[in-house]
Amino acid sequence: MRAWQARASGGSASRTGTGPDTADPDEAAAPGKSGPAGFLSSGSPRRRGLLAALLAGLIVLGAGLVVVEQLPTRYSTTSTISFAPRSLNVVDADVVELIANKYSVVAGATATVDSAADTAGVTPKQLRDTLSATVEPNTGNLNISVSLGNARQAAVAANSIANTVNRAAGNDRLIAGEITARADPTAAQLKPSRTLLRVVVVAAALLVAGWVGFAVRQLSRRAGKET
Image 1: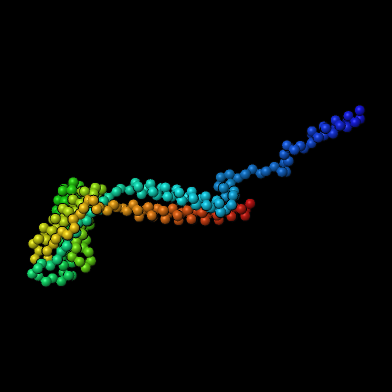
Image 2 (image 1 turned 30 degrees about the vertical axis):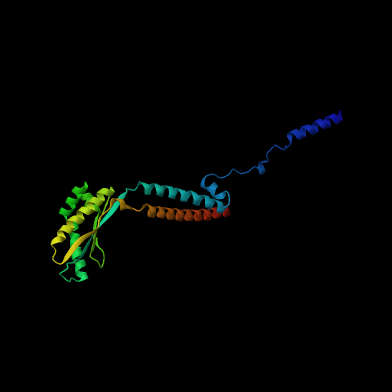
């Protein structure tokens, strides 16, 4: 009888004691941190820095490429008039360049622009805003460049202006002009250069990724020391 009571007492004690499934309050794990603090205190600083750098770089790269592709496309074409002394006159090269600059003013004159705009099917304002007439240094070459959203219209406008300028130079007593290169729509240059802009976007993404990665590593080390 006493032996049975002892066994019962021992069994009761074992049932009311701390079992293998009973959590010890002193050994209970503290709740983990969440949000930025949890991110900075979890894992190695190097790994967190790499992840943050990758994420930041991808965001900048993606956003930048989208912006580049959404930029308005313009086509630039150029027509060139070459001026030279007339056969019976000996004119210094500096004088030829000076006179060529005079005809760059003719290229931008209101009557010239209005006529070329009508021929190309654009407004005078559209043409004037994108027209460039410059003389190459130390030469008599006048380059007439036009940038529009349509390559054919840009070429037509540039050639029309070149024809007007060349006719105006026909009565010049010192120099003669000749259109040595007509604007070609198939050779139009795309502006802004998509390749250059993509390179800039990639460089910016790499810089941002490097900066973010470095900052996150430093913050992670600081958070680790504080804990």
